[in-house]
Length: 293
Image (cartoon, rainbow, N blue to C red):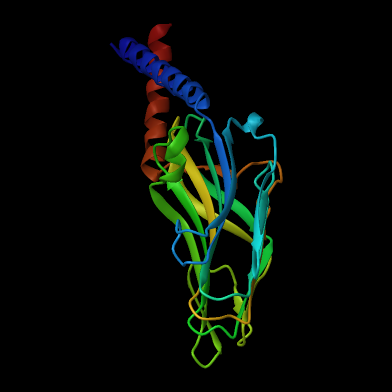
């Protein structure tokens, strides 16, 4: 009976292992990277209204098909914005404005659905990325705002295509807003995760170089998740502005060769109850060997 028990136990383990391997290979066929950049200026303060100036660029495909850089730029009397995204996710954006009654948006989205636990045990995963630094300036602009939003989202059940744009939950979120007051002074408010933004007390915010590490939780064997990194810079100028500018850059991957934040895996420690079970399992194995002789 003991021999039959261990044979069944062994066959179940082999079957489970094969299922994990097959699931992993099936997941590999879905692997895609999505990168996009959008710059949009609207003199009517309503995205989509007449007079809008917009440019964008995007690429989607398996990692080996992300083979070019993205570029987008707009410019006109009193405004300009531009940005680029490299093959490996590194990007930079910048812009300036000096005219009245308009809004502008600059957005970078980088998504990866190829985060899979190929091992046979649960793994804790972290996303690591570098912020290269940035500067946001707003002065003499009553009622105007200049805001940045940096987000890292998870998609728990990723699929190809448009699903990149609809992640399930946020795991990292940092906001900052420069606001022009009626007396032409400027205030700054930051919220969410700390990226060490420093306000000079006058009209400028500096964001220093920093390494960010985000705990994404535990990934079970064969499980896949998607990760979406998104940076948005938006402005609104209802009256007038004397000076407004921004710039921000991010190498994204720590190792410089990944098209999204670098993912770090570490095995989940075996619970104490599992450790207590191991001596009993070892004793059963000894009994099995003796009976098989």
